[in-house]
Amino acid sequence: MSYFKPKKNPRYAIEVHGLRKFYAASNTSEPKEALKGINLSIPKGSFFALLGPNGAGKSTFINILAGLVVKSSGNASIWDYDIVTDMRAARRCIGVVPQELNLDAFFTPREVLELQAGLYGIPEAARRTDQVLEAVGLSEKADSYARSLSGGMRRRLLVAKAMVHSPPVLVLDEPSAGVDVDLRRKLWDRVKALNKAGTTVLLTTHYLEEAEAMCDTIAIINHGQLIACEKTSDLLGRLDSKQIIVNVDRDIATLPDSLSRFAVELNGTRQIKISFAPSQTSAGQILHAIGDAGFGVADVVTREADLEEIFVSLTQADSAAEDLRIAE
Image (cartoon, rainbow, N blue to C red; front, top):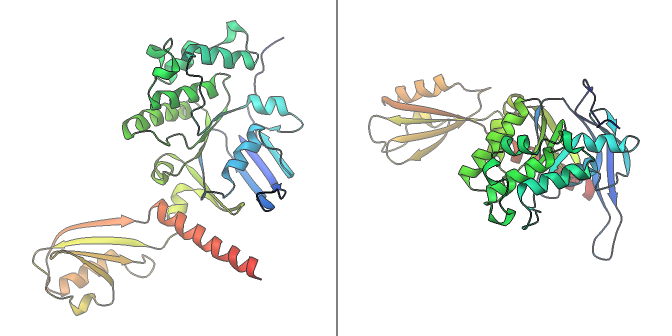
């Protein structure tokens, strides 16, 4: 029997329509609708971020795709394979890197991957253990016990474990949690290489700067609903907010009248920070007003709205709407 090979040209890497999950009440919790009709299409080859506050529904979404949670209604497919009617094929097309470091301390990386390959029914001749270990930078530690690996190495071993059956879709659930800056950078270098080679990556993270820097598309989920799904650049352009920081050539004793119409913050005696809406005011107008006040400009820095500001703005607005709906 030949080993499974996924389709070459699926419509989407992941596609869901009307996906819902309802948890019934228990002795310790109230009934909850964790997902409320999610519609989402993730293109193949993309580096896609799924963001949201704790309890927003991200883990439920991922666990449904991984086959760990049963959906209440709706449809979901991975690489054009329905997760219910083509369950085996769908699961062979996805690799999930969990947040928890769930590795047996007395297995070596080579043994971990060989065992995982066996669980997927991969014939020994078709296994890529050494290739996968090299891809995540663990060739030199292939025969060391997992307990001797650093936190970053263990995280990379989980990536290797998820990739051992060559899935076209890789899901990373908070992969850099508890990993120091240097090891996080090395981990992302490996993941970006996988994405560049054609693997679709779905990322959940609390490090918003990571999503902003690496992902081409970002979706935000809150209270079980999708409240945004856009190209990263388009999403960052949503917030009509910008800052300009100007260092002037002499001390500022009092705020000049020409600057009173702006939202000004004085930092020390020679630095002015002004927040403004680009749709209403230009940086040139602000610099002109500073010149009219008699100051020379020594240095200028502008700062765009970042993903954290967008995220807070969208989730707070959605939470307020949800509270209003509940109150009604």
